[in-house]
Image (cartoon, rainbow, N blue to C red; front, side):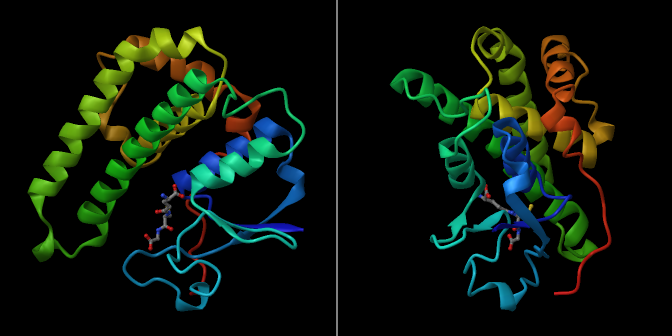
Length: 212
Ligand SMILES: N[C@@H](CCC(=O)N[C@@H](CS)C(=O)NCC(=O)O)C(=O)O
């Protein structure tokens, strides 16, 4: 069976989990709880993925796949599901990939801020990095607010998926920021996203940290 190195805390993993549910193949992948620690990476994981990052997909009889975007491409190649995450039409595909980059970029910003604000010792924290993360996240959110008509005008794809998961992650880690404030269109769009069975089935949670 295919094995997905997984955590219920990881937004990149959740992108993949939502994709597996959208494609109707979640039951074809076994999830393996794997520690992802940017400061103390588990060295036993290096032979599987030298980046020691999750998601990582070990496929039966095929090379390992790393990175959420690559694994979503794999999921999309599998039969099943009513949804095409990466459309074959060249322009539609570029827009889906662009929005995947925007959504994943928003996740990257949130992760950088989390590492700086939570993991780094107080005396080493750089408030400028945190301030820049907040500024960039707000710029992305304002861009998305203006971009909602485009999201609503096309079928669900990998771009919607990444943007939706990124907003769920802001709710999970930075709820106090209240990103919905002043962004009614994005809030309404995200409400619809949150009601998808694939999103309900893959909720974030802080489970016990596994041993490295
Ligand atoms: N670009 C990668 C990012 C994956 C990533 O950074 N995952 C985090 C977990 S949320 C991780 O494994 N961090 C451990 C590390 O950076 O060493 C993707 O899209 O899959």
